[in-house]
Length: 383
Image 1 (tube, rainbow, N blue to C red):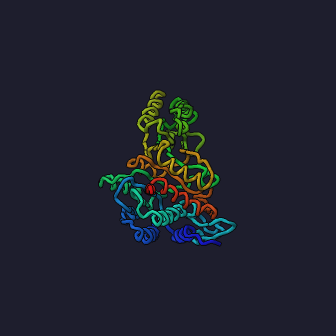
Image 2 (cartoon, rainbow, N blue to C red):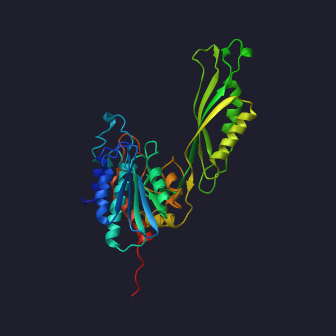
Image 3 (spheres, helix red, strand yellow):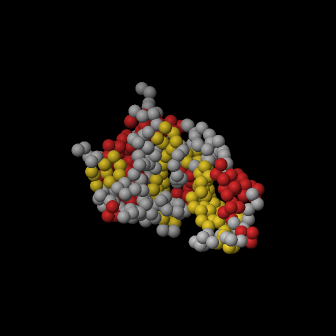
């Protein structure tokens, strides 16, 4: 078997049990690898979260690899076929927590840089890494903190490639050029509790709210656009009652969420929800939480460079997609005009026996390296 530098580094990172927000030394290992390549490495700590900003060069354009060293908890260890933090190969797959999300991507990024810099020591622009240990957690002390610091310093980012697992079935079939925003609401419909035999003396919030909830569920919030499906409003929890079958409840509690596109705004969605509730004459309290704004990178320099790299390496014409949950790309997009996410297949992420096909590991590294070639390789000299 041919030795794979990327596979070896992936296994090294998986063996570090970096359950969010504990980095467990992953980033120090990256620093040890990046510093000899000419990266100036800076550790930025915030409330127990470890962040790394590493940059090589001072010129533009600035290309950033972004990712996270933290992983989700393992779940019941006894249900894993092998220990989650002992990287194990079986049947052509590498098993371990973080194998797909996203330690293979980080390893591939580092090795891609090693190879690219060795071939092009005089490359144009700058290369940087933005790595956090707070992506799988609250995401309040990670990437958002580094982006705020970069903005305060006036450091510009031109391109950012986030190593999230975006492929659907095989490596390279899908990249993310945006993500939907997430807006949640906690709605409390107020009624008057009473005996179910005397409904005239009570006010049933379930009955009162039903027409409004039906209207909210049927509402077309927007039509989407070229890159996004229409915005969706979904109830996730609903509760009322005391447990007794002869009591009209005094209140109805509902949790709901918008996954919204760039075709809508958070403020616009809030206003329309309140208008519907008010039109139905409901007495209510509503608390909002905006956990992420949508972002979108239209087809352009970065997506073309990555798509070309994927085509050359795999023969696939990749699909641009905005499906899935939120990611740290939402923070980076505030300070960077072109943010794209690309990584291995995501079918096993956050699951028992998380894994990646070994056959995808070096091609992932090659795609990252080819993307650097397409964006930062010096122009050939005419002879």
